[in-house]
Length: 282
Image (cartoon, rainbow, N blue to C red; front, side, top):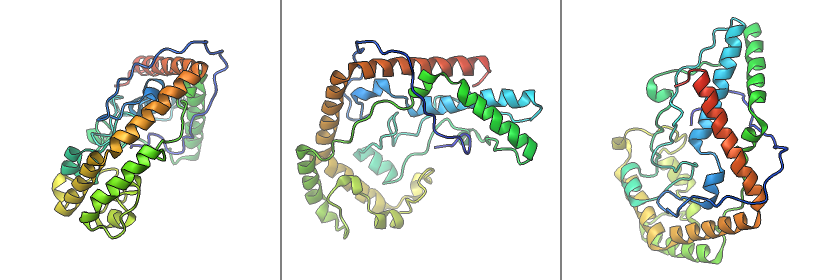
């Protein structure tokens, strides 16, 4: 993922508005292929997070230009995508089709500065201009409404990968993978590929994988075996079912929290749309 502005801290804020006593029902439909979950409607997508960083950069750029610091943000399509290896929320997807195409590598991101051949400007090296940069980005961050900032910290619960059904399916996955002959085969699919395989297949620094022809057939075969075993063992079904049930139950028990989260998401969408629209962003 492209980091828009080096040194920008994580946003953190809480809205002081009182949450309504009802929670709008999540509009997410079950879709294991995209790993859609009930929390999705209350969480920012990767595209929205990138668009917020882009909007803040446009605000900071306008501020710097007023102080005669030529810091211009190149156009960016805010519909950022990490590519087909991930869903909209950054969850790594698994399927035989993806394994055949990419092995254990991840598909490259789309609609970024890099894909357009553009370079994002860094912090100015001149001390005075650097001070303007710091002030303008601090002001731009403070200009984001508190409820929009709070949307970046939606409710979360732990993964359900330790439930009995999921653990039993993990055992079946392990048995299915034994014929592949991996010497350090882990018990948990979430620990695969192993560190030795990561080194063997050149998966370190995997943000921008090479062309498909650079991925070895050995990697493709093992990735395909892994994907097939995750399906045939019932591991993906068990994990998805456990995650869905846990999130659905949590939403039902925390109505006020999710009503506020829905308001926060609305504020985030409005800020992004208004800011990029008014400053002439792509």
